[in-house]
Amino acid sequence: MNSDSTTFNMREVFDNVLIKLRELESEFQENKGIFLTEYDLQCLLFRKLYDLFSHNEATFDPQIKGSPLHTEIKFYDENGKLMYRPDITIIRTENYSIIHSVADTISFKDGTRRYKDVPSKGFEFYGDTIIIELKLRRAKNGINDVESIKNDWGKIKKIKELVERGGSKAYGIVAIFNKTDKISDNCLEIINELNNLDQDIRVNYYTGKYDPVYIDL
Image (cartoon, rainbow, N blue to C red; front, side, top):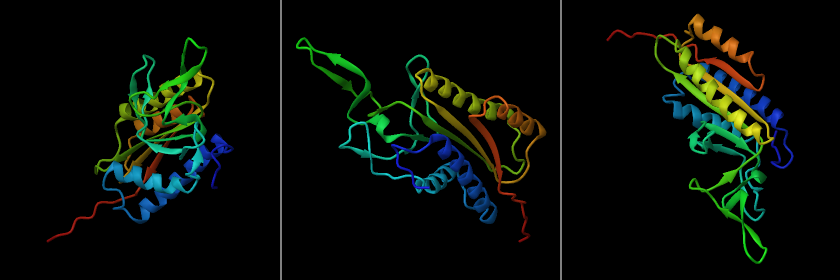
């Protein structure tokens, strides 16, 4: 799928992201040293998602072209502070501007109006979104941190609530990659529980199935 940003179905894109994550898991199992850091994971997923989109689509200001696919975008919290920063975010290009605000305007005495300048982050956006949080566990004892999983889900849930308060739609994915296939029963239970709370937020577990091998010197 190579989607036109003005027409693509966000739910369809969400489903395709989940497919790409499973493809990445297969690559991880075949090439167990592919991720040395969580940033490696982010870069390789970005590469796989890149071909889903056109990257020269009109933004809010049609003369400026842009891409739906981005990393480290900050979202405002309920207090108007830039507190939330997911690993990967997908937004429609026509919903963001690098020139000015997309919502706030200034009125002048002569009756004219113009948009306010962009905020400190250098752009502003609104509308439907997909939020992806990535975790990579490299330790031999695998995954047993329940609170970390709950915190990532909670962050996405809060962003989703704020986005949808404005009438838009948000989807979220917590993708947990594990070097081994060791995961505690508590973690599996909380993943199942979270996946039953909101069908638009998926918590998925992926494994490299690495079994440590010790070489005598």
